Length: 305
Image (tube, rainbow, N blue to C red):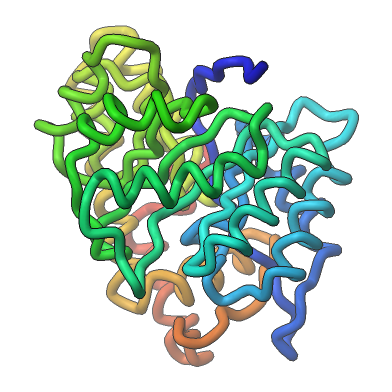
């Protein structure tokens, strides 16, 4: 039987580390894990959008997951493996592998080339994937801005729980707070980790208990302060931290988010290498400019507080 999972606090979505020649650089995973634990993060959500999953071969994804589990062994760090793929057979295989190596849970976004056109079609896809790991909690990863799949998530949960016995909830990377409330307040127990870092405060006000995101790789202290301020009822302080988050994301996005965040990780001593095409990387001049922009913003001070 699958044991239900309720995530708490910050869950970081790490970059997949590459060498300069584009090959996996698995030696860096240990540094990534060490940084997470140092920054109060005990769950990693690997091979997600931040992890460039769609730019990885299936075997690379298996190797990456195995390495994360090896590094996490004996530490407080737990690993959720994103297994989604345009090929459902590959996703099923990745799910089975995640269960075999002892992952905490699996997640999958919708196929995004040939798209499911109905809730029933999406449930069929997710049932095929989740059946590969029947003893692990399964999260649907809702990110319509990237997949182009925008369906009723409350209908998905209501209908999907019958077809997907290990359906645990939704990794919600969708700015629709209206729909988020409907899902959070449905009958039954579903976990709804928030996936929009720049909107965290709004989600907390609606009852969110956890958040999965890319910026927790390099800006976790900002969000820890936000959570602490919210819990203390200090909304003004919480708003200040959320605005810092927005300004950091805005600055990075000006340079191309994936390449900029990978450059930032190198600045922080965790060299996760370049991004793979179709994502792009910064020139040396742009890296210098990015550092200057972040210094002017106060970023390096914010993450030391």
